Length: 217
Image: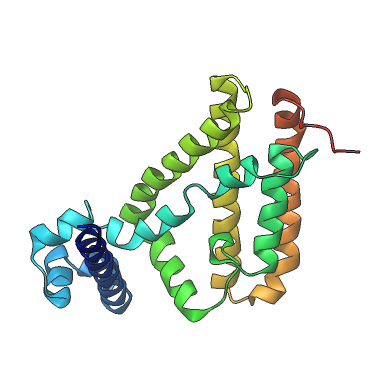
C-alpha cells in the first residue's frame, strides 16, 4: 500500500512540474496575457479540470515556485545564531544570497531568470497574485516570532516589514539588471541598499522585539 501511495504522489509531482514548465515556456514565448489556460492544458496534454486540480489560477502556474521560499525567512529567524536579532539574521541571510546571486534577491543575470522576472514585474495580474504568497510568508514569520514570546501585533507588524523589504530590494535589483547592468556591476549598490533598508528596520524593530539570547561564553 505504501509503495502504491508513493508512486501516486510521484506521478502527481511529475504532472505538476510538467504543467509549470509547459506554462512557463508558453508565457515566455507569447506573453502571459496571450496564453490561455486551455493553451497550457492542450500543450501539456491534460484537460482543463486536471490542470485546475493542480493550480487554482492561471497565475499560480508561474508563481507556484515561490511556495518553496515561503518559510525561508521564518526558518532564518528560528535558526539564527545566539546573540543575533531577527532583523540582523534576515539581513545577513540576504547579503549572503546577494553574494551567491540567488534569484530570489533579484540579483541574478542568468537569461532565464531575467526573462522570468521581466514577466513577473511587468504583468499586473501576476504582481497582484504574488500577494497571496507574500501573505503566507508574513504568516509563517509572525508565528516564528510569536514562538519567542513576541506579542501577536508586534510579531505581525515586524513580519510585514521584513517580508516587504526583501521583496522591494528584489524588485530594485531586477530594475538595475533590466536597465543593462550585470549582476557583478549592480552588486555594490545592492549591498548598500540592503544595509540601508535593514538598518532602518533595526532602528525600530530591535527596540520592539525581545533582546536576542546572549552569546554563550
